[in-house]
Image (cartoon, one colour):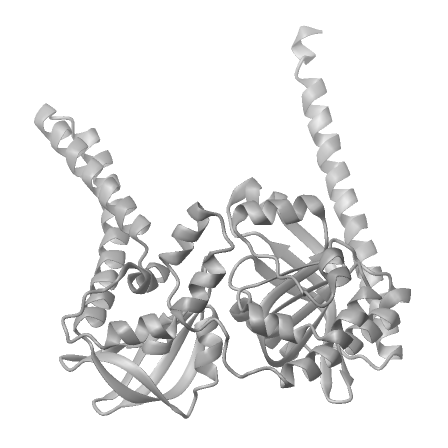
Length: 424
C-alpha cells in the first residue's frame, strides 16, 4: 500500500487537468455562442463589424489613455447621423506586473466614440469610499456649484477644471441624472461609456446603443462651445489646482507640471540653459533614472564579485560575475546615452521651426502611454524624435503645419519637439 502513496496526488492532478481542459472548452464554446448571438442582434440593428476599424480604435485608446491599459474586443460599429459609435467588450488592466495587475483587471461592455478633442476627465457614480480614497491619493473631484444634486450623485475628476465643468452643461447633467449608474471617460479624441464590471446581454444591445448615441451627441454639442485651449495653461492656474491636493502629493506633482509659461521661461535662456526638474522629467519617459541606476548597480556588482573571484582564482565565479556585468551594462549604456543626448538638446539646442510630416506609432509603450515617432523637416533636412501620451494627439493635429523644435547643428537628425515638453 505504501508503494501507491503517489497514486492519489497523480490521479488528482490528472483529473484536475482534464477538468480544466473540458471547462475551458465549455467556456470558449459559450463565449463563441454569445458572440454569435451578439453579432446577429447587432446586424439586425444595423451595426457592423470591421477589423480595420478595431485596429484604429485600439491605437486611439493606447494614445488617449496613457495610464491603465485598455483594449476592446468583439466590436460592432453603428453610425448615428454622422456620429460613429462602437460597442464591444472593454478590458481595463492596471499598469503593473504579475498578480497585482491580474487582480486589477476588469471587463465590461463599453461604447466608444472618436470625436473632437475633449478635456481629459473621468465620471463615476458617487461612492463615499472611492471618493475618500481618491482624495487621499491626490485626485481632485470637480464640483458643479449650480447643481448640488449632480455633485452629490457623481464623482467628476479632471485636471482642466474650467473646461470640464463647462462640458457638463445642463442637458448633459440632466441626461446623466436619469442614467445614474454609468461611467464616462474621455481623453484626446476618445470617449468611453460603460457600467463598471457589467457585460450586457444581447437583448440589451439596442438600449445601450441608444444611450451611447444620446450621450455622445450631447457631449459633442457641449464640446463645440468650449474654448480651444486648456484653461490650466499658466503657473497661477496650476498652483490653484495643486492647492486642492494634500501637501505631500502637491509637492510631487508640482515638480512634474510643465505649463506653457514654464516652457517659455526655459526657452528664453541663452544656451547652455539650466534645465529645471520639471522639464528634465521629460527624459524619464525614454531614459528613466531608475533604469540607469539599475544598470549601474548590476554592473558594479559584476565588477566587484568578478574582481574578488579573480583574486581567489575562482573562474566559475568570474564567469557568473560577467553575466551581472553584461545585464547591467547594456540597459545602463543605452538609457544613459539616451538621457545624455536629450539633456544635451535641452541645454544646448537651438530653437527653430520645422514642418511636422508624420506621426507614427512605434508599437511600444511606457507607464505614461504609447510611444510615437514624430518626423519633421527643417533646414538641415529630415529629423525625428519620440513622444508619448497626450503629446502624440497634439502632434497629430500639427501634421503639415510648423512646429518649434530644439536641434543641434552638429547633429541635426536628433531633435526635441518643444510642444511635447508641456504636460497640462
